[in-house]
Structure formats: structure tokens, C-alpha cells
Length: 174
Image: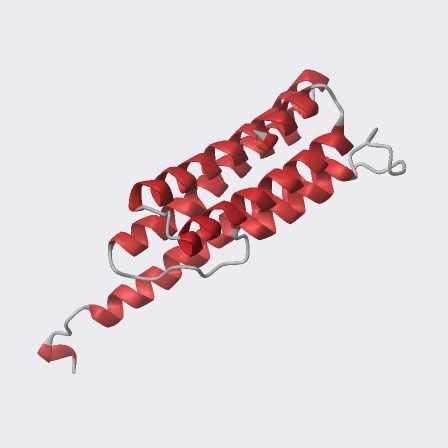
């Protein structure tokens, strides 16, 4: 709910409040799964649903940022938001697909906590957020777009290496 509130606050150009809502919502998203597991109330479906909702929440917030940029006529940062959402989804997908193949895949620089920190900085220090005359929202999106693409590459490379190590070698290669 807090990340949905953050998205609405972004559309309303209340960036500092959006940043706070996003930070608190993201912290709570991180803790809810751990609490479920520790309390013994967790389930496989609960873990699946939690992960799915986390992707939706991140996408909704970045989509609101894209809306803000598009509304201002800033096509490049709006397009970077699209790349960021795609990259973020692919970071999660590569991990899920790797784990379905039996390969642990937590490698990469732009994990969800890193993305949350970068976007939080961008929101809290956006122009008009009230914390000085900064404009860090577009740079935060650019950094996230690059880092998510890089992380997807890191994960693909990692999984390639792990799967190659598991494949039987041809006797002629030895």
C-alpha cells in the first residue's frame, strides 16, 4: 500500500513524501517475508505471492516516475524508466529461471536493495522535493537502467558458467 501511495505522490509531484513512502514500504516488503518464515506462518504460495507483489510495486513506482517525465515532455528519462522496469524484471527473472534449473543466482550489482536505495535517493533529492535545488531523479533512473542491464549480463554469465560446469564433457575434448 505504501508503494502505491508513493506512486500517487510522484504523480502529484510530492517527491520527498513519495521517497519516504517508498523507503518505508520497501523496508516493510523486505521484512514481511522474513517475519512469515520466522513465525512459521510462511507458505510456498505466500513466498511466490510476496515476490510477485514486490515486482509489481517496484514497477508501479517506476511507471509513476515515467509518467512524471512524460508529462513534462522529457522523453529520454521516460524511456530510461521503461528500460529500468524491463531491467528490474529481468534481474528477477534471471534469478528465478536459474534457480528453476538448480543454479543459485544472487550475483550482480543491482539487487533489489541497491535499486531501492538508488531510487530513494532520486526521489528524496528530486527537483522540488524540498531538500535543496537538486535534480537527482533522472540521474537515478539512468544509473538504474545501466546497472540493471549490467546485472542481467552478470547473471547470464554466472549461470552459463555454472551450467557448463555441470555438463558432461566429451571424451574427445579431454
